[in-house]
Image (cartoon, rainbow, N blue to C red; front, side, top):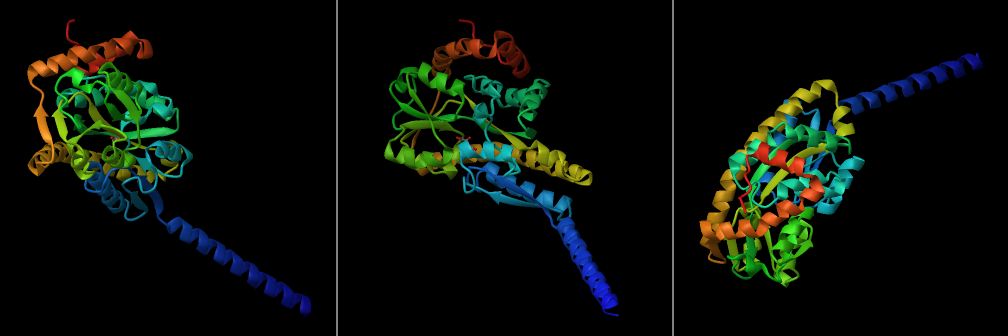
Length: 342
Ligand code: LMR
């Protein structure tokens, strides 16, 4: 009798465990897949807004099977940490500037920082849509990083505490740069002192004089209030801020197949939203900065721009040893850039 009772009790307990186990498995299966999306800009900058659009669309198109947690303003990872965190799978999506890909070991992305290569909006978009990007995308994938889209945040302007009109005005200036070797070479060519610095540290560094100036897009200069701690802004459009929307390859490849299409749709639509919004926000931001009366804004004349181009073209030559002449020629062809005849 006793043995029978023990067996029944054991069966009941086992059934209970099985039930609990399957309930747990069911709960886990029903728990949303979490996508952590970290970035370094403020929520009201174009990337901050587009990230929220991606969140809303991803959650809507997957009927809540995906939940996107957004961490703006370097609140989760700073510049130098976020790519490593992505490779480790501690975060699932980022949208960093491609000028910060050097540490990933894909140096080819620095080529897009060649002075005046990507100044023109149409040329820049032509470049990022060109088949050449497939080769670069494969190199990123080999590092465990899958590019989902490229977001074009427009052309760079310079800010500093003195007018930057002629190349010689840069002499001896400490200028903050993103991590690319080409940006480093360009500042040196102008006679400045390049200083790599995380975006999140830049406001304070400008305020305290750790650096004298920086280059960025107007929407970042406005939303991070850099214009409050700088006296001069030169509309030079000498470089460009392109983001790569990237994910961890293992994470993305491991997603349930029926989630791939809805997420790809969210990527596509938030990319369209970004490119439209960024173009408008950067024009508006420059107007707002001008209207603040806090900085002296100077638009380079054609002759002044010619002097900058002539001063900076040696960087293109110098980088032939880094990227190879053929590769640079291909980039010129894909972007439609013609180096001025010297
Ligand atoms: C910068 O570091 O200046 C920018 O790349 C920041 C950003 O993400 O817009």
